[in-house]
Amino acid sequence: MKYLVGISRIFVGILFIISGWIKLNDPLGFSYKLQEYFGADVLNLTFLEPYALPLAIFVVVFEVVLGVFLIIGYKPKFTVWSLLLMILFFTFLTFYSAYFDKVKDCGCFGDALKLTPWQSFWKDVVLLVLVLFLFAGRKYIKPFFKPLPTTIIALLGFLVSLWIAYDVLMHLPHVDFRAYKIGNNLQEQMDVPADAPRPVNEYVWSYEIDGEVKKVVTNGSEPTEYPRETLKGVDTQVIDEGYVPPIQDFTIESEDEDLTTYFLEKDKLAIVAMYNVLSAENEGMLKIKAFADRAQKAGYIVIGLSASGEEAKQQVKTDYNLDFDIYLCDEKVVKTIVRANPGVILLEKGTVTNKAHWTDIEDLEL
Image (cartoon, rainbow, N blue to C red; front, side, top):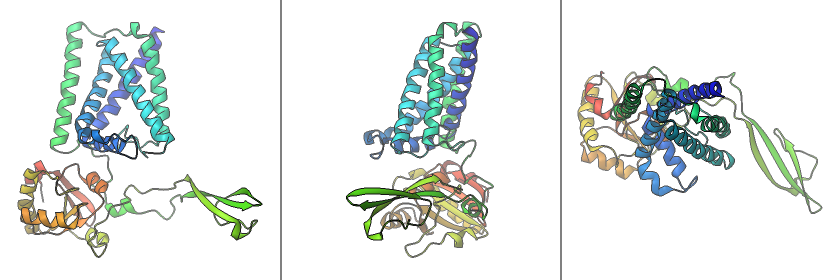
């Protein structure tokens, strides 16, 4: 029992640290995921949406800290109780999400590793079993070091976690796991290779025959055994999604046309990303004008990208004296491009060459 508790303790602790660090690397992204859970279509806890970011920071810091506490044996009773309550909550959340098909990706490992809702749930079930085992054998969880070093390591784990959260929020994630990271070509990330696996769908056809509903399952065309006029409906079920490109919804649209390909073929393109121009940081917006002037002198075409309406975009251009056009893109996509509002991304023929949080715009090399 003692040795099994020791093995489980190390495994669970490392997993919590890794999972927490990945989200700690991008707490803003995790807050977007929490907002999705809090939305009316999932948990209907919309009153929590404004607090998604502080809650995200608390959860990820606590997750890392609990992993550290468990490994070094600091306050084992508090640690295992906290682990148990946390994993019970997340097991419920992932089951709810999977059973009711509410959220396609739980965000457990941020953008580093995508899990389906059911994969997330079964992962949490395994963790729950291990945590219950640790809970039952908590008397065997002893500190590896003497009290003072143990306390110092625990405090350092907490302080380092807080510093990382602050640093990535004021700049950008230390490691970018998203499809828009530096070095990626956006056209390539959107393309579907000719030899890529295709989607596999199943079709359930319902016919009413002599007062009874008959169902026929096919992989494509409508069956011929029943008269067409008896058809009551058809349901489509996705068996295999096939190849899904990393980037799916990126667009650069004016009111009249889709200009995505046109701009991604430019030698030098600077995109000012503002998912919502009305909530963009004022201090950052004040820096945009100077950046745009500097970028244009360096030969860049400068455009804005936002999900905001035309009236709001024209208003912000007037308020901050911006002389570039702001095009339309889905809000979730703009949030994914760069974790800042506003933020900047530089491209050469569609390849990302640099990006910056608004706090670092003045230092961005062109």
